[in-house]
Amino acid sequence: MSNKPAVVKCSGFIFSILLGIMLLGVIYVSAAARLLTSPVPLPHDCDGFTPPGYPVPACCVSGYVYYASPSLLEPEIAAGALVTLTTASAVVTTTHTAPGLYNAGGQSYFYFDLEHLGIQPGDVVTFTNVYQDKQEQVVYVVEPGGQQVDVVLAEARDFDPATVIVDDADIAPSPTAPGFRITGPAHQISEAACSAGAEFFNNAMYTATTTLNGLGPATVTATYRPDLPVSGMYEVSVYAPHGCAYGAPLYVIHFPGGTYERALVEQPAAGEYAGRWISLGKFFFEAGAQSYIELTNVTGQSLAQYSLGIDAVKWELHSPFAPVETFIVDDLDAPQPDGSGFTRGP
Image (cartoon, rainbow, N blue to C red; front, side, top):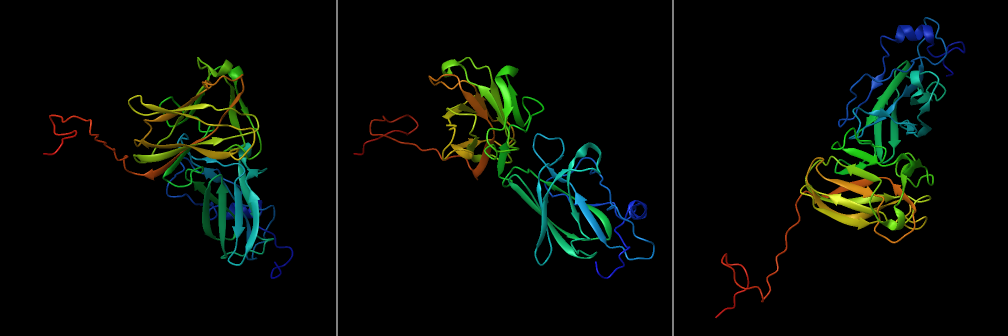
């Protein structure tokens, strides 16, 4: 900054102690999620020292991006989230959350050097945090010295509150809890990154070996159980990976009462469906976690053994109403005591 002596640096260790009472960090939490424990503290100094009597410049800003999921007790730190810092005039810089030297445990966080970007105390900046399918913006008034800004992305992998996604990373704590569970012999189940960007979350998914000739009994079972916000008609889609999975695995949709629908989904090694959502159709689901979708390594097809991809399932609300029933009365339907059926006029 040209208006201060060259010897003036950003607040260092000694000065950060004096600022510690004031600069405890600014924590932004979205309305749909809350941190159950205190945010992880980051240092509020920038490896410099401000001599007494000089104005305190804006030094640096760091922070964590958290994500929330139905299967998590509380939000977790999002590694690799994209954070963009902008001013009122232009985009200044972007970075990704990554492990750093100044935090215990090596959690991923972002860091911007405000002084060298020419940002002064009192300037208004915007942090745009992007992680998977969720984006959140935070408008922030810069303070003197070092500071911390955290944000929680509610349902980070959801497009909106009417969409619920259960990924293979959302491990459920129990068989009836929302989330993902997989069972089977360890030698038949593995985690793989088939093709960068082809898998829905974290570039990884489970793979399993199908049964011989696609017939049972099943040895591997994956269960996706959503916590749906309301009852209604949902379109169910599955994420089709590619690169180390192919064939047509069988999905079974379970509703209360034991009813289900079956659907085969192609997992091509390449092609138009690779790395995309494929719809299984629209079905009526009750609110809550009563229904679930099951995938086994039985395909019902006469195929040699092959690799099966186990990734994400999405429920997208289309209507909060149950489907309207259709009744057909044929001229062969005899009159019934309740008045239904076909009656020929005089």
